[in-house]
Image 1: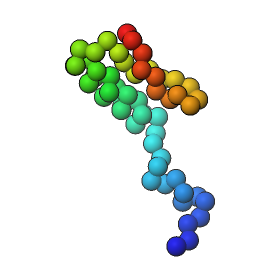
Image 2 (image 1 turned 180 degrees about the vertical axis):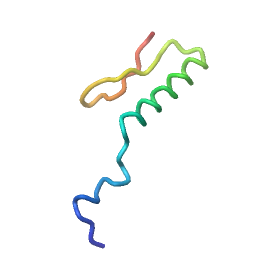
Image 3 (image 1 turned 90 degrees about the vertical axis):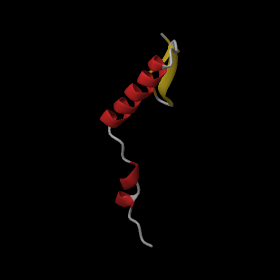
Image 4 (image 1 turned 120 degrees about the horizontal axis):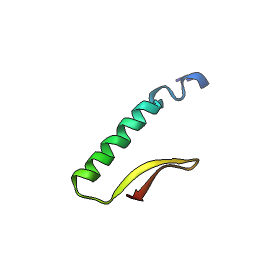
Length: 53
């Protein structure tokens, strides 16, 4: 099978909006469960950080 470099990440592309939607869904689940924690955007190696609200 011959895969060019341009084909490497085709199935792995996730848009920022998709990530934000998933973050919102996780935060909704945390809120529904009565948790005092929520996910916030990080930077670098920590794209999502769980923090106490």
